[in-house]
Amino acid sequence: MTPHPEGFDDRISRDFSEGQVEFISGVYDNLEDACNEICDLQCMVEGAIINRPEGGEYMWTYSNPPLFLEENNIRIAEFSGEKEEKTTYRAYLAEKYGKVKMLFSGVHLNYSMPQEFFGLLGKLTSKKNDSKLKSEWYVKLADTLLSDSWLIVALTSASPMADGSFLTGLGVPTEEWNSYASFRNSPYGYWNLFLPELSYSDFSSYVDSIDRYIQNGSIQSIQELYYPIRLKPAGENSLEHLRNSGVNHIELRMLDLNPMCCAGVARRDLIFIHLLIAYRTAELLRLSSETLWECSADAENRRFHACAVWNGRISERERLTLHRQASRFYFWEENPGFQSCALQLLDAMQDFYTAYEREGMYIPNGYAISDVIEFECQKILHPDQRYANRIRKKYQSDYIGVRMDEIRTG
Image (tube, rainbow, N blue to C red; front, top):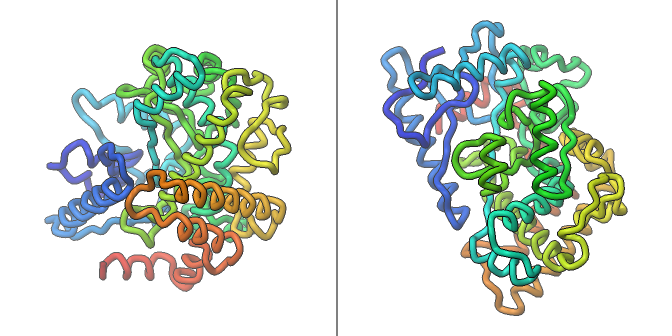
């Protein structure tokens, strides 16, 4: 494996291995600009590696890697100087989880609310507009969105094909090689050696619940918490910094790399996620006087605002189990109850935004809301509209060969 290409700024880095390029966009107030920057960064790297003296190379834009000969050939990302500790950390991960699992790639979507929002939230709740209010809000939003993570997985899974060498390395039984639309989100995917159970009763309890796993040696740091949704501070991502400075943004980590999209994820899917976050935000604001600041620490008795399918009761472990279950190739057919729940939610969102537009409220440019929601409905109802089905049909004859032909021809 050749070294990571040099000469780029901090927007182009590495993930676990030396061959895993990581793109880091700037912070934007609209999705279009963020997607365009990711596409531009990809073009920069592709232009640099195609003309390498040691031989032309190509970007493999897919969540599952191509074949590899053996685990020893997987080269850990090599950082130097002030960043050398990153290599040390990756060596620790390789020893604990194996190098094969670290070869998954995906999209992390970071989202934050504008500062003006927290001024309004403070007035609504009669709370002081400070970092504590901000952190408590993000904890409640993360709690709610975690109950929706299964839906995002089911709508965006795009990695049903994988080489046998990779699946064997993951320990996937051969009878399950065709069972998943997203191996990365499946039980064989990017998870800790245990299923974390975090507290969302308040910000302090949330941080303490993570610290408990650090103190008992389950994880080394907050960075090792492999969780669908994480709360992060600005700057250094450490538990101490999170506790002291508070939450800056929420990170959604369940999106597959979609090989049919330049930015690695369909823009309509990003718009839908944005609409879902805004819809849940409106729900939380409406319920704020009732429950937002008075959630029970007992997960079994917690009152969720997220999805009627729960009937108000679900444990943390059940939410994560459902998230992993949603990665199955035939999830919608195997779970008609969740199909009905998803359609009811999308209908409610459609009604909400129809009224929202009727009142002349702000809609970002390019947000064809009805079309976006209908686009997601079609994936729920029709298997041939789902990414995983389309990808399997396209690549099943020669997964690596057909994909490489596409990459070479642009």
